[in-house]
Image (cartoon, rainbow, N blue to C red; front, side):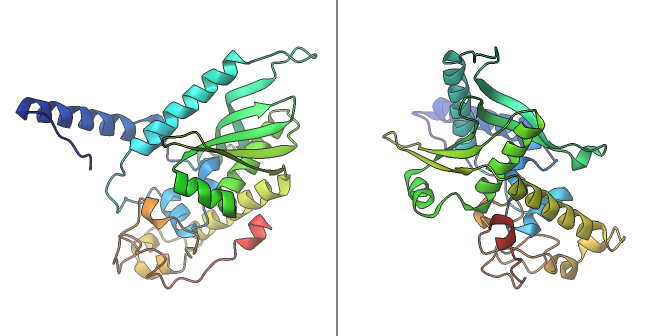
Length: 273
């Protein structure tokens, strides 16, 4: 996965060791090991990927390169520190910013059914829910032209619901895209907070979970035909999916992606309308 090089044999050996340390640490971080679906995943347009994740199905793809994730984590830490330095107190005595605080989007007595996560920033003064996205310039331009897509948009409103559940009164969602190469480029997409978008996403998740257990047959997921009834979506980000397996003819082993999938498109428009 990692490309290594050294000025001599010792340098190459050390480079390989450092690369292995980075990969191992990233893939064993709490976020990487999390099995429960979080707000960043609930809005994924691909129901098949969500189903694989929900069942903790064996991954088909090789472990992904962690570099972008590590850089993104570092950027979130940097922004956290930046707002902590700028923290102020409102007239009612509360701090203006809720920074990287965990919120519960939906509680449940069943551990696996809880939807919760760390919200990047909530500004009590402007009642805005912020989410940071560190992206390449080409990706930033795509989001600038087309908007954030259903997954990021849904994530924003889910965190809005989480803030509401925490006693806040969010009025706006803001997704901040920051280009990560060479020069600083910032694009902010924003819209009014809408609780119904978050609730629709949770209802969709419940439907997906109900379908996974509807047959009552624990062996059903080992059958290709069973998986073929679970739709993917033309907006699916297959190359980032842990279950993407190009050319696969057995969905119980891996998904060939939307280009080769015969599964019908599931209407996602109702969620983002």
